[in-house]
Picture 1: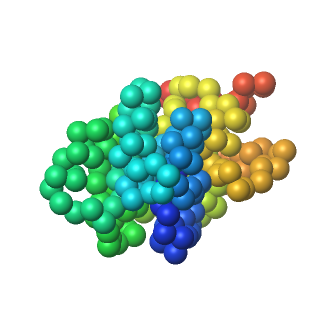
Picture 2 (picture 1 turned 90 degrees about the horizontal axis):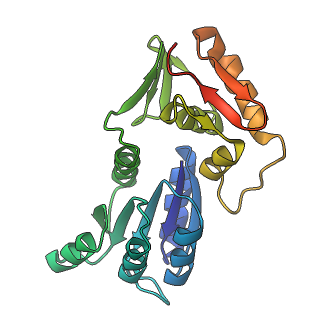
Length: 222
C-alpha cells in the first residue's frame, strides 16, 4: 500500500516514514502544501496523512483542492490544532479522520489501516483465501493458523492481490502500490517477489496466474 505523508517537521516525518516502511508501506514524503497538492493530484495513493500547518499552502487548502477535483483518496489530518472548530472545518471539507499531535505511532498505523480497508469496501480486519489468512492489523500471514514469514514486499503483493481477487493486477499497479519516489525499482524486481511468494504459498494452495502482457490474476474460487 502506498501512503503520502505531508509533514514539515523533519524529525516527525522521518520517524513516521521509518515506522510505516517497516510495516510494509511505500511512503512518499513532502514538506510543503504545494508539494502535497501536486502529489495528491498526480500519483495514486491508498491513503494520505496531511499536516495542516504546512508552508506555501495550508493543509486545509490542500484538502479542499483534492475534494474539489473529485479525488476520493482517504485523507487523515494530522495536526496540533485541537479545537472543536478546527476539527469540524477539516471534516466538513472532506477529511476522513483526524489525529491530534502528540500521538502514538501504533494508533496512527491503525487509523491508516482502517481508512484503507474502508476505501476498498473492506470492513474486515483480515483477508482470507482458502487456508491463507492475512491479518491486516498485525501484518502477519497464516496458513491454517501457522505463521508464514514474508518479506514486506511479498506481503504487500499478497495484500494487493487479495484485495483484487478475480481482477487482473498489472505489474505497474504493484509498483505504484509498493514503491515510493525515492526507491529504485529494478527491471525484474516484481518478478523476483512474485517468484518468492509463489514458492512460499503455492504448497498451501495459493495459485495465481500470470497473464502474459497484462499482469497477475487470483481466481475467484480455490
